[in-house]
Image (cartoon, rainbow, N blue to C red; front, side, top):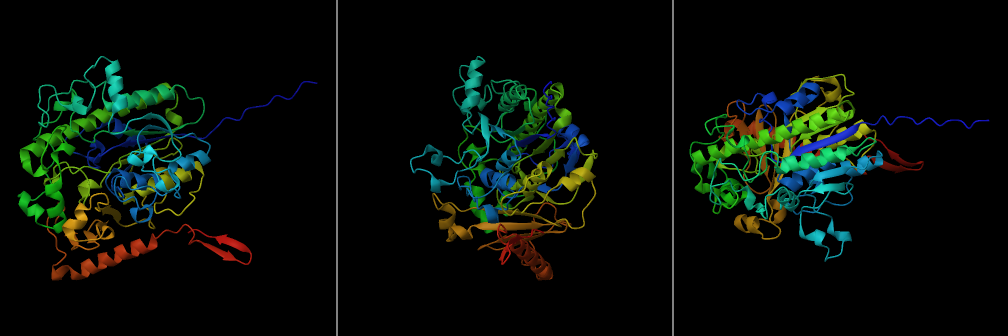
Length: 517
């Protein structure tokens, strides 16, 4: 009698591809009607998925922002305050959840996760950098900020002088010079191209549903990009800068800006530059912004390469894609560059989600969404539960229903910024504050924006009349009631989002009862 033949059941789980592009502004999409930046490949993804136009980071800079993205927690709960703040090992995250769903989540790039030091030996070299890997990820190709893996790859391609990050200095330019000349490497040899190629090579090895996180460094500084992207945009192109006519007016408008603006270093943005950012004028900022726009186009081109590879592999219709950023870039607004503080320019980021199983396509969502929503979205899609309380909420109802607004959804954006300096104590000495007093929180809806500092004066902006955030009306008696209303809303928001991991559980005579709303 013949033995029964076993029939292998097809694995119907989707592939998951999470892509982050570091420091990409949410308004820099042609799908979002930017006046000059063109992003045809992100736009193509949005046409098949859902574009979230009011999406905001939960914090800045990289480590705090990514902690919110990866854990679904606000900074008030994950407590990653700065680059180098450890992520508490007790928190769940999207890589660990993926493992519970049967995936081997694989990283290309970096996560900027400083490990919890309490269970590690004091001499462990992992404790000497904030550029650790989020627990749960298998690292296929790391690319931290020193970029040595990419530099080695460049040398293998004949760039013998690719021995340091000096390779970013445009050919013919002096170190620190703002130049739209191209560097020595080509558009096929950027860090983005390198990581895209590594992902595509790995894709060809897969024979079961996979989960990948491609974490691109660009358009993060240094601001330098090869042809044809280096001169794709002119300094005269783009919207008006959101800033006061005079830098001094901006700097003296609030004690935090008076502290931060003179201490921002040019070397953070142009490789080899020295001195404070205040040395650059309006023309310099315009020139830098044009290069930044070109860097966005360079990343978009590599996204198109990934889209085509997925289609060629027959994986396009089986892959859920999330495209976003960790935080944004000031790009000359308010006479500054980089991220941090309280202005929208640092926190408004792109988000596009394409789920091939959804019947919706081309959806546009104008409800306020948060980076904290990405983890619960993936949890719902994969049918797993987070192992602790979450601050974000699943976006799957939007993904499945296009632009349908939800009456129970949040009515404002919320983010936090912590400017403590544990290692050096610079901010603490300047303000005469304790570390836990060096922070701010923002609540922002379509009408007003309220910024609450723990120990510095608050700010209130009437966004209807002042979309550039130039006129602080917090001390105006005519707006006292509005200020109180938004302060109370912020207090209530923070009270609702205190860590709820065990607060929804009660021990009874019949045993533990857990009831999550």
